[in-house]
Image 1 (tube, rainbow, N blue to C red):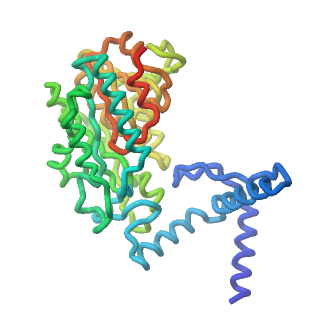
Image 2 (cartoon, rainbow, N blue to C red):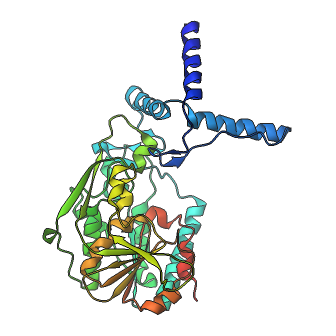
Image 3 (cartoon, helix red, strand yellow):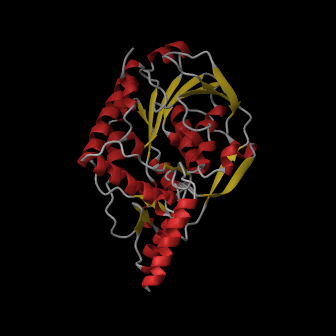
Length: 374
């Protein structure tokens, strides 16, 4: 047995040495640690070096992806664990983010971002709409593992809805999603809603504003199979059921602006709504709107203009707005480092929609920019 283990570790060492280091794990959607350098021969220098080297060995070990999958299979099959990698493993092959309690930074983030939306609504009365999308666990509580303590996200959203006038119009999408919960509204292996879930929320938006919804029957639906999302990259369960991404074959153009200052940019790259090359990589959801660009414009088929301030949940929502507006400007504060007043003044938007998932709304450190005047 000692000889067998010795040969195993020697073989693994040889394979490690012969295999090139990877800079990025597409499956885990994360950057991998590179070989560290010893910069100082001292107690702190040596400690930092060996700490970094331990991370490096874990990240670059030969067959890393297979080892992680084997560990997950052992935990879920042999030990019947209902969570893996911080992900709750629910019924119907659904995976849920684990959210047992509200952290202090989330409380502060929620209050700060609601204050920013309130400021925006005060500066542009009658034009601001707030849509906070509930997590899949709120719509499908029966599929969450029994006994798993989750925060009362539904109660928090109801509290925001009760103060809706302070934030412009609060568009409560939970009733519409709950009504259609027997349908495919959230990906099983990813934290986003599906294109269908986004559509029912969009219908609620149209009903609130008196708009005629996008006619899905008048457009060709395209699909891509074998999508494994962000939850799967953490849980890596052996029996995960892959998802299907659906989109509509729209010919509207998308301009991604080169943002160098506040206001309306003058240079950009024009392309289609979807980056179909992403269908060949792991992060297939990034095909919608070509990912999370700082400022982009979709040319629509309707009338007037709308500004969408968003996280990635809006990426599959925005294409529906082409039926209602002539121009849909999209801001993602992760890549847009300015306030909004000059942009709004330059375009005189008819409506402003703030669309976030509940989870990212409580943690987004950049949304405060919406509340900054000037």
